[in-house]
Length: 324
Image (cartoon, rainbow, N blue to C red; front, side, top):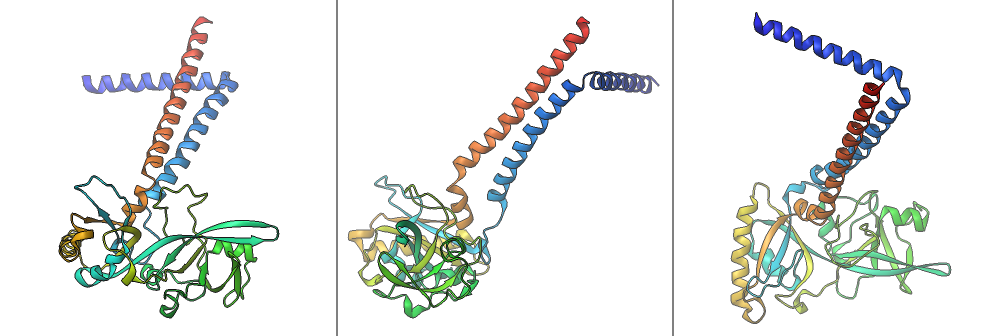
């Protein structure tokens, strides 16, 4: 009975407080509007920030079976040299043979071409990729086709795929763009296709270069002669697709064994060189972790300031009401 009486008293007290708040709101519409605006602006900004962070952290990469995609990162642990994205292109053939966990392996390098439109030139940032990389990602061009294997040869790299953004902006979304040539760096390049809207690879730049955008504008054949590439020199991005059912830990063990074989076979270049596998999702998010945490901190600060301002307004209003 005492508990019921205490609950009744608490409920009556709450009703009294709510009536008092409602009367305060009705008697001071300007004050109410100020409180609502402060809270609304704080929540709006915070919601936008949290949505942006959530989309980066939790949304799967827009590739086929993205959980099976990994990045190979080589390191020199004994020398202290740090590397957060690349691996030796010259070691690629050995990895394809030695690591049974890999369904496929491909490398990429950044490229820069200049497009001259009228009297002005525009620098276009893109990627050199082997013929198997885009099929590995499983994203088909919206126009044309992937890079044929016969085009991915040394000295035969004057073909490319355009980004949707470049196709629309520079070539007015020409539906007959495939098969045409474009003039880049005063040379002709055959357009093989146009990638879908929103497609990008890599999703985030794995380079310290300060580029104006993360969006790559073209993809062209890598055209590398692997027999002439140096062993043990991390000089390209290397990704792999794990076979279905293979765990990352299993693939890591096989990769370490492969690197031990490379160190034995090429002691002058590969001794002490090791490698780690990182999911492509983690590698992509890792490129923006610092900015994401800064955004989250900013969102929390905005909410804190908004609540503090509202509390200050309420205290000030209560003080004025008491004084009157």
